[in-house]
Amino acid sequence: MSLVDAYRSRGKRPKPFPVTPPRATEVGDGTITTYTFGQDLYDDMIAAIEGARKQILFESYIWKGDEVGQRFKTALAAAAARGVEVYCIFDSFANLVVPPRFKRFPAGIKVLRYPVYPAGWRFFDMRRYGRDHRKILVVDDTSAFIGGYNIGRTYATEWRDTHLRITGPGVVDLKRAFADFWNLNRRKRLGASQPPLLIEAPSAWEATIRFHRNVPRLWMFPIRAMYLEAINRASTNIWLTTAYFLPDQDFVDALKDAAHRGVDVRILVPLKSNHIVTDWISRGYYTQLLEAGVRIFRFRDAMIHAKTATVDSSWTTVGTANIDRLSLTGNYEINVEVIDHALAESMEEIFTTDCSNSLELTMAEWQARDVHRKFTEIVLTPLRPLL
Image (tube, rainbow, N blue to C red; front, side, top):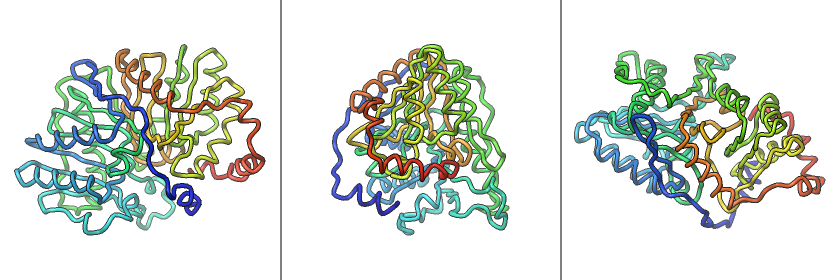
């Protein structure tokens, strides 16, 4: 399958796709800025790092060793050199192809390398196998970034993703999310003498913003429940974007039930993702979704990697979790949930722009698909619980 993926991508050149400029929305006592183009996001992240005075918390699933990744590494090293506390986390499995030299850091940067094989001798303890799929940057108490963007040249200009910048009381909640992961792993990965990362309790509670964290070690998976609750409460529209669509049947049934009661349910996925197996398996759900009235859009000319949803023009989630088993019941993930009409409207505008660069799948087109596609869907069905 990996060979097929490589064959599909050979000789392909990136094509332009529509994006929405960064837009700040006042939410509660802070702001939330949306990003749909990697270069815009990276510029603001680097600016925040360069302006840090006390502390930087940086976490990324993939951190490429190219010029973009080096730009972040240099900025973090410079911050540490001027006395800023710098903490970094990255997933070793996701960065196996990154040169070892790039993964060596100055002594002033505290680095937690989440291991390729985290289970140790506990072979049958499934709580130990989750990957660290989160993407977080928190600078001082002033700003925090969360979303789907990894760090690398490809993501800067060739992929369509979504990220948020948060200011206000919500920043402390994201700091706590980083600290909890750090402290959960610090003794085994950094040594028993490593002190915990302590975060003060917030002075204010931002009721419109909540962070949901999947923590496999503690058998906590609230993101799936968050989605299902919002879907089941929907009365007008559900617009969902995901890079990989491999839900369980209960999730599919919730979307179908919403469509049956008259909710405008739309799902935006890549026309061709970077994982062909995912594409083939996800198509196995299309028949029942289309029959229920769910509309399926396929983003063309670029990989759409966003993990977002809006419901009833008032509820929004953006984060790192895809709609698949690995994200919803397997990996360390984090999504932010926001109840705010203005932000939801902004996200719906982004969704509409994305759909303008998409092909809608009709029932007639789907029923006319090739026999080998139907055969592939059937053969790969048993793999659904594994992906």
